[in-house]
Amino acid sequence: MPRRTTGEAVVEALLAHGIATLYALPGVHNDHLFDAIARSDGRMRIVHTRHEQTAAYMALGAALATGKPQAFSVVPGPGLLNASAALLSAHGAGAPVLALVGQVPSFAIDRGLGHLHELRDQLGLLGHLTKFAARIDGPAAAPGLVARALAEAMSGRKRPVALECAIDVWGRAAEVAPVAPIPPACPPLDPDAVARAAALIAEAKRPIIVAGSGAHDASAELLAFAEKIGAPVVTYRRGRGVIPTTHPLAASLPVGNRLWAEADLAIGVGTRMLQPLSVWGTDAKLKLIRIDIDAEEIARFRHPDVAIVTDAAVALTALTATVPARREPDPAIAREQARLTERLARQEPQMGFLRAIRAALPEDGILVEDVTQLAFVARVAFDVAAPRRYIAPGYQDNLGWGYGIALGAQEACRDRAVVCVAGDGGFMYQAGELATAVAHNLPLVAVVFDDGAFGNVRRIQQQQFGNRLIASDLTNPDFRQFAESFGVRAWKVSDAEGLESALREALAARKPGLIAVRVGEMPSPWDMLVGKRVRGMDEAWRPNMP
Image 1: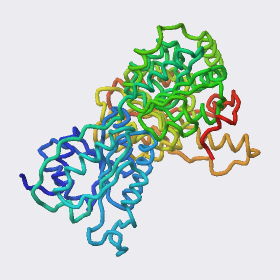
Image 2: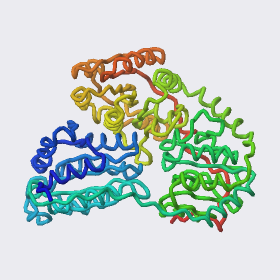
Image 3: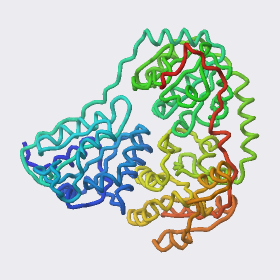
Image 4: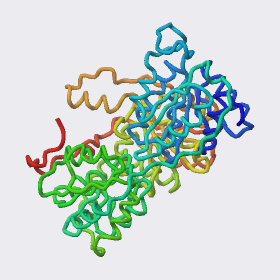
């Protein structure tokens, strides 16, 4: 068996699992890991950032854009805490991200001796943020732990995982046996559940499908199933693009809210169904089928009539082969979609800017949203043709995540166009990472909407608190000059026509770019995003909530 350091063993294990890029910030606790990468003959590369949050966000962005596991490395204590928001977001978004975290000397762990970057019970903290967390105690254990961690990340519901390693262990050498990748586990299909679900579908007159990001890898199967039973497919945020949003059966969140009132069967595919089951309402007349690889999600709000716990593609294929012949879609779908189009016509200037971005961005391009006024509208209005071409934060909805996520998506998808839309507030969280875009020649284009405020905060204060404004105004740089100081090409525009022209030019250049868009206050989209209760709450079907 070859003799390797722990760092070398981890690098070889990552390469064996198809991970050849590590997003990272160097630091003394992980020096031997970085040296192992430097001696890997170019097989493993480092993408280094200016802040730990961005290293972790880049790994998350790459995972969300590809569906494949990605890895990042940070020092312990402050480094991990700086990266923790990305791990939390990865957990909420179901992303396979591996965190490699340094640790104080092995003899001092959890002893409170005051070593550099010491964090009490760091492994326990990692356990709260990830699906699996373990400590590497030597080179021989490294390949097996990497294999197990990545198997956990990819098995069932994808989630982040973590391995920590002490500063004195990374450089320790011993004989190391390689460990082959462990195939991801998946619950087997239950034919009886499929038969019972098919019977409910056959009886239903107005079925409705709600699909989330758990259906990303079942896009074709979902579309075939929806077309056969003539059911609308409701998506929002993380699920956008699981079927083409221009398809006649595609329904944005507001459309789904209205169709929900008359539905007699709801089919959830890879989604928590948070809004439909906890906000829109449910009763004994509404039958429920849940398809999810995560058994914990099945009865979180209400016990379903049928639960199919397995991979969505497997379940949908079986159902499509079992349900009766194709039927025509409910005419209400087109009627309600037209109604939404009429409502969106009043959502200016957001819709004009979104049309400009859609016109300039190639169909296979990726749009990453930060938490901003434009993105709130994009979640129900931006056309997306396929999965993983629209990246949203999901329920964490963490302001400032966008630019780092988009950098990671661009690194993982070098041959595709990536655009990040952000407000002035959110963009400044990671604005210094323009340096990272230049250093690694990432042709990401950031579109920054500058209204001089945390716009959503200000609107709430205006509308709900008697216009008592506090802590919502912002002092900004000249964003064009700021970007140009990093060597980034930049534009300044003020309308949709100018944005489309600048974005086309920026994307054609295939260099890091920034477009600053000066805007005023924008009209609220929240009447479309916060659904209304449209059916009763029968005692027999009360959700499983406190």
